[in-house]
Length: 161
Ligand SMILES: Nc1nc2c(c(=O)[nH]1)N[C@H]1C(S)=C(S)[C@@H](COP(=O)(O)O)O[C@H]1N2
Ligand SMILES: [Mo]
Image 1 (cartoon, helix red, strand yellow):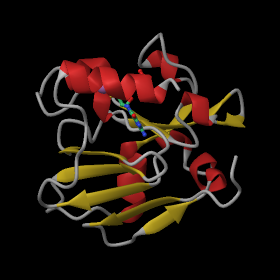
Image 2: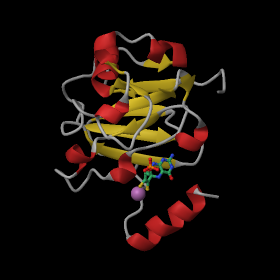
Image 3: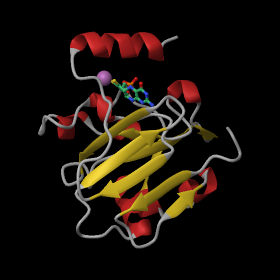
Image 4: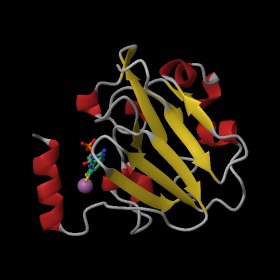
C-alpha cells in the first residue's frame, strides 16, 4: 500500500483527523470488527466501525450527512448519517494485510444490506471504495452515484477495466 495513504475525516466535527493504516489498526477493540463475514457472509476482512471514527473526530450534533469521497476515480456519495451511523464499517485489512485496491482498498465503506433497504438514498452504490476523505455535513453534499441502470452498467464496465 501507498505509505503516504491517509484517510481524512473532517467537516462538522470538533477534531478533524488524517488516519494512517496503523491508526486504523490501533482503534480500541470495541471499535474493531475482526471478521466482517459476521455482518455479511460474502464479505471478507477486518474493519473499524463508523462509530469509532465518529467518536475519534467528535462529530457535532448538527452533522446530518456522511460524505464519502474517492479522489482516485472521482466517485462520491453523500448519504443520511442517522440510518448508518451505528452499522456502517470501514474495511481496511484482509488476512493481516492492507486492503488491496482491487478489493476497494486502501479503505472502503461497507453498509450491511439490511440497513440499506430502509431508505431510498442508501444503496449498495454508497459502499465507496478507495476512500480518501470523509466529510460530515449539515446539508447533502457532492454525490455522483449512478442514477439509472444504464449509467450503472457503464460504471461497472469502467470499474472492471
Ligand atoms: N471509488 C468507487 N467506489 C465505488 C464504485 C466506484 O465506481 N468507485 N462503485 C460503487 C457501486 S456502483 C457499487 S454497486 C459498489 C459495488 O461494491 P462491491 O464490488 O463490493 O459489491 O461499489 C461502489 N463503490
Ligand atoms: Mo452500484
